Image (tube, rainbow, N blue to C red; front, side, top):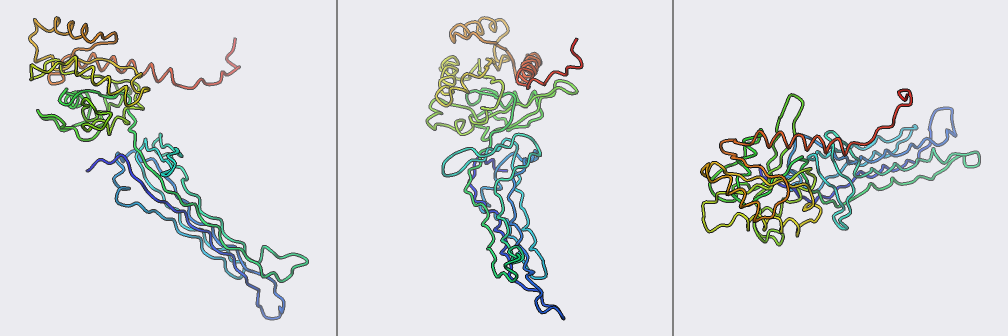
Length: 352
């Protein structure tokens, strides 16, 4: 399935039904009085966060979504039926913004979350509403109110705990396949990843975290070069970034330190907040380096990069070092979850 993480749609809630002017006509009741009912309300438009969806492709080809209008009021005190609501299913992590102003209106962050994004119009009043002691035979009625109409921009930012950064062919897809249930395309040429991949890493029976892999970045990505810049938004909600570097590139003329610096520079140009997220350095393809040279090469790399943060040495292909990295990530994610959890009010019954 083609991956789509941005779409524009037009939605229209249903108009309310019109009120009715009617008078009761019964045998032996010459002046039966008004009995015109109100119109029904128009249908609402809802957005529902569906955990089974991971793309906005359905909205790329179906852009207009309208709820039905309310039924008109009728005689004999009969009110019109409400218009049928419609529910638009969207992936968890969808941001709903005004297409004209860019203002964010809603965010779907929890599976099953349901939000009204367009309200149906109220029904109009029938002449039954206008009956009074001085107006025994009212002929007034009101039309139904129009439903809300909006042009919206949908943007998907996947919800993941950990995001993978790196140049094309750094081994990100191999890593996510080695530690999670994701099965991305893996090949020995650049840009095999064309859209974000999500994988769930299970550490224990009730311990897991989600990893997001985006297409590899290249220098100039913030200006539109390559593919990764289109998907950097998917890393904005992560708790931790793993900067994966190919420590043993096939081309001897390629300097992995220069590549690592280029990625950091592009990250800073794109979003300063994203650049300031916790970031760990992961030196991959250790199996391509002779054992006697590994320590020296890693030390030289870290020194030249002037890296001060955590460093992990792995081989995603042979899974060497992956378990230690996964356990460290789980500890970090748990600590972040505890730190960001809201403080619950203290129960005075348990005070000493």
